[in-house]
Length: 228
Image (cartoon, rainbow, N blue to C red; front, side):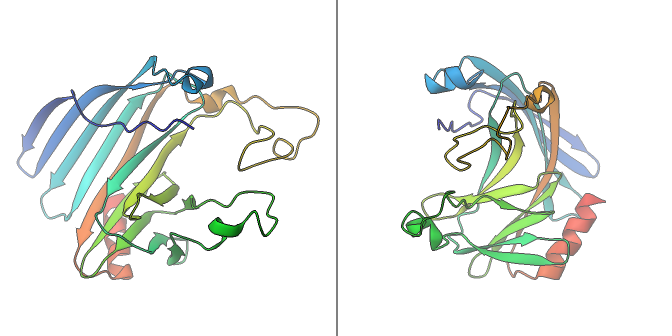
């Protein structure tokens, strides 16, 4: 339940200039808990080295984001937050067939207990390839390759939180706040998944696109060009 706001303070910054592209390179370390016991005590006793590159390419209207981390911690989640400055009631996320519009403030969040829901609703949603917040005359889109989960957060619901990875050492655990009851439907045992702790170097490829007039087909075309 301890969320850390990681930033770029103290990072080393360099630039790379090529004939057809420019890259801002940022390297540093974040302090995070090494496991759940240290998280419970709010002790950031481990480091999470990171490498972030922001790239502008000639002829492209997207900002490339390449992030690499060396994960040494257990049972934690890392998300990238994009401050769109667009207070939005809805998000638009790419699907297999086109895109879906989702309410950032669904009504069931307010009365799920009164209605007798066993499991607390969540606004963490799936995406296939891109997600956008749309304002009056401008929009912000995030393109992903492999990252399949997002949430709209912030007091004004103006920030896109893209899940980069989630390290988890068990297939399921009982009595979680959002998954109460038996562990993933298994009544007799817990199944450890040590490989899912992701104790290795991880890399992520994303992009940021800013525009004035949102058109779903054009956004998809830009995504295809980015992904290819």
